[in-house]
Image (cartoon, rainbow, N blue to C red; front, side, top):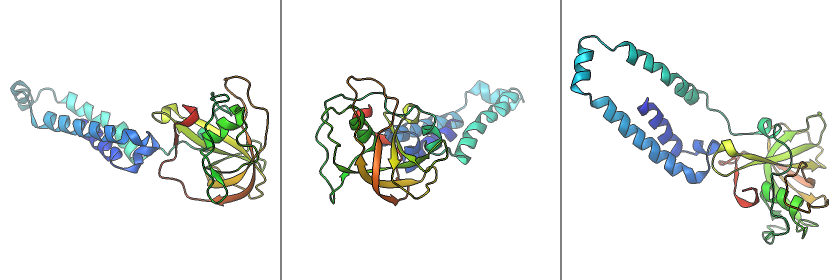
Length: 237
């Protein structure tokens, strides 16, 4: 069991597969933990106390080791059926908006690239809901995220991205309502969306929001999923 878990942890830590579960900074500790488990597993496999060796030699204690192999089944299933990163299904089951922001205290927007300001989805949402200086007003921005279809079956959809502090267990979905795109979009489709924020009154105090800001789009490009599906840090955490 130690060998199997250690091997999986080491493989995850050394590959991009870990990014579906934890942030990139935790890959090295994950790989180190896997290596420690592998060493412990090898020690347990190669070293046996004299009493235990004698017991096995006389045919005693066999039921324990045989039933213990069943503990490996969940790990094998996890290895063979790898869960995907959080996507549209999980995002649609979280409350819209944001769990909080930094009211009235936002740094300047990043420098435009080809006339468009690139922003993380959680940055856009936090500024739209809590920035009293309304830094987004009149600015053309570019967001990168996946599609969450309209629950009512309409053409309007949300562009979403999960932001996490440690692992997928603490991920929070940030969503933006996209208007002006006439092309039908599929759930979990990754898009680059350019457009302008639809101005609305911002919050007067730091508190959870129950709405998503609106982006009036003028350009939508279909792209492939990123190696790291999550955003990290900034105003969400």
